[in-house]
Length: 337
Image (cartoon, rainbow, N blue to C red; front, side, top):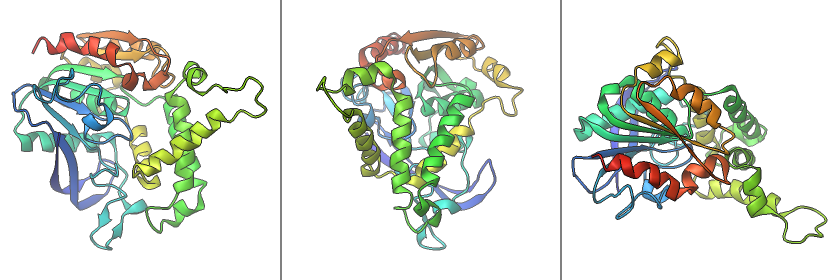
């Protein structure tokens, strides 16, 4: 996949605020087959799906970079290239941090549209979005239903639930509990809080069964359970080691809370009814964030949709880990191209 960036220029944000200079980073495959697959990435991923979804994307994989024109855009407020709190404010020469405008899912989708036009893409054969990437995909489909040939919404929903909003707030609270976050001196602020927030998030991404399988104590006579504790600390540090900062994470949590395709469209049901392309809704049977019963409720409002439930021991993260099951869903769709 090839890295690109588009300088969007002046940008008005949905929640208020204006910047004269905004850019978005995106990746494209070298293939120019005319068959376009657009992938929307999840919360802390980047615009290179070969990096975070290597089992699915690449030469010879089901999402073949030598067969399809694949596009993925880095959402706003990510630290991986698109404008956000980690970007340099040209007026100060320092990162924006907490002075960056609040950003919504619709702001990122607005950027997608600009990139699509820049690339000269008039039709997207398949739009895939999982988790927070599904938020972006559903919002875009509600805005431009005629643009897409087929839609895959995986481990996601048309509006943030109270359950998920409570989770993102808990993670923000963890970041705010680190005094260095509000001091906002540089990108190292809030690092301890971010480690805690990520550890909290991981519990929601997985499930009881997954931890039993991977984090059980090897010694049946253990005095204090330490394996899962060590894993949580490792995962918290891993996110920082990947170049994530607390400010970007905090802002992306706000963007998650902004997700509501029913806003200004007469409600979620009415908005879903306007999405006309054939749609596959994928749920994971152990997903505690987007349970199958929630998916069942909103799938019925889509005019041309089916729900597929994947089985996994790993909860919400099953959309990344259950490669063969996900492949089995995508292959029949791709065969119709």
